[in-house]
Structures are given as C-alpha cells and as structure tokens.
Image 1 (cartoon, one colour):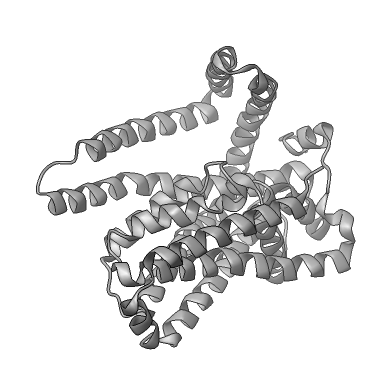
Image 2: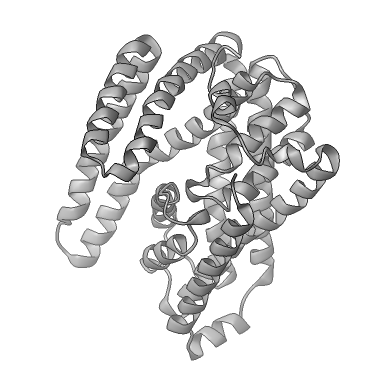
Length: 363
C-alpha cells in the first residue's frame, strides 16, 4: 500500500529545507531592492499560465479518448488530470498519478482499463518524445552559450551532444521496430534486462525480474495503442500532438513571466533549453516529486542567465508555481473525487493482478 502521507511529508520537508538554504545563500541588499520593484501582474500571469497548462493537458486527454471512440467532458478530464498531478507530485518520477488517472477514466467514461491505460501511456509518450526531440537543439544552445562564455570549445557538452544524437536515433529505431516487429523489440529489451539482472546487486534482482515481464506487456500495449490511434483516430491524435506542443510552450513560459516580474530579460533560447534539461531531471526517481533535486538543479541552471541577487527568489517562485500550486489544485480536485466516488477511488492498493490487467492491450 502506497503511503502518500509519508511521501507528502518527505517531499514537503526536503523542498522547504532546500528553499531555506537557497534564500540563505542568495539574499542580500540587492535582493530586497529587487523585491520592492517586483511587478505583481507578471507573477499573476505566470500563475494563470500554470492553470492554463492543466486545461491543455485535459484537452489532450479528451482528444486521445475521442480517437478511441470515447467521450469525456473537459471539466471531468481536468478533474482527472489534477487528481493525477497531486499523486504525481508526491512520488518519485511522478509515476504515482497514472494508476489513479486510469481508474478515474474508467469511472467517468466506462472505458475499458486497457484502453484507458493506452490513453495515459500515449500522453506520457507524446510528452517524452517532445522533450527528447528538444534535447538535441538544447545541447547545441548550451554548447554555444558555454563556448562563448569560456572562449573555447566545451568537450563535455560535445560529448553529451553526440550521445544525445545517437540515443535519439536508437530510440526512433526501437520504436519503429516495436510497431513493425514487436517480438524483436521484446527480445532486445529482455536481453538487456536479463544482462542488467546478472550485474545488479541482489536486492534489485526481484525488481528487474518484474520489469522483464512488464516490458513485454508495455511493448504490446505500445504497438496496439499506436495502431489503434493511427487507424481510428488520426485527426484526434494530431490535435493531441498540437496540445502537447502548446502545453510545453506554456509550461516553459511560466519562468519567463516570473523573470519579467523581477525585471530580468533572459535569453529565451537559453531559458527554454535549461528547462528541457530540468524536465529530464524530473524523471530521475530520486525523491518524492523530485523535491530538493529540482531546487538544486534549477539553482544551478538558472544561474546561467539570472543575476545572483534574484536567483534564489526566481527558483523559489518558479518552484512554488510549478510544484506547490500543483499540490493545492490536486488536493482540491481530489476532495471532489472523494465526495463523488469515496476514498476507494484512489485505488490505495493495486494488486499485481490488477496491474497486469491495466497493461493488457486487449482490454
């Protein structure tokens, strides 16, 4: 059983400690002067953009469901998204929200679990693919900036750039094979995981064994979902892709408005590039909601274009809007869900059998 209360306390404690440390390290007389000149309308605009990002995700869910022949009202889709955001904010790699969203989709639309899983899976896939596509230009931008600052080539960024390009082509090839020849893709992933199991410490072997079984189901789900979306819902899938792109532009623009509110005019390309890196860091299963990790990473990356006097304020304001607001909005949506379906709507405990049912592409 997932102890969300424990995760909430841990994530909140780590995040607050990180915030206090950042304030202590960066606050000076110039910080106070900057806060006196803050333009509140831009901060409110950043908050409104964050709220808009929820609506865009809800619309994406709506059109992905429509591509499979199911309909959901935007407000119900928004309720689904916000409830998932709350639990995602309290778990490493933001994975806690998906099972609950799948169960709520089933309750709201009577969509079979397998198809609901396909919708959530496709959402994550579209987000991941967008970020990964942005990785190459991101590394070029960072390389150009660091080279101009140091006056010479950056070996580390060049290496990451090369690795990123290679990984992108490998991923694309693997996805194509997963669609055309799923058995080949399953065979490759199985060999990789078996090799990892042999090399891993004993305490991780059981988890990797589970991943071997899960990976085969995931590949089957990916193939069946992709074919289903392409065959019966091409137009709706295109609309969902559009909402994915707009969502990330809006999400990345939250920081831009915060900086304008602090009277800082950043390099837009550099600002977007650093947030692509942060989006990748967010997937690392280090702490619940990446608390502490994101504050430190943002502090490091934002220092490339934010003056030191307002760096700490920028990080805290950005984290407050993109993380604490998520928790608040998600908590309100969750209370509504509890009133409607009861506490069991959250599926406090999902058995291995139920988990495998969710991954069954035939449902």
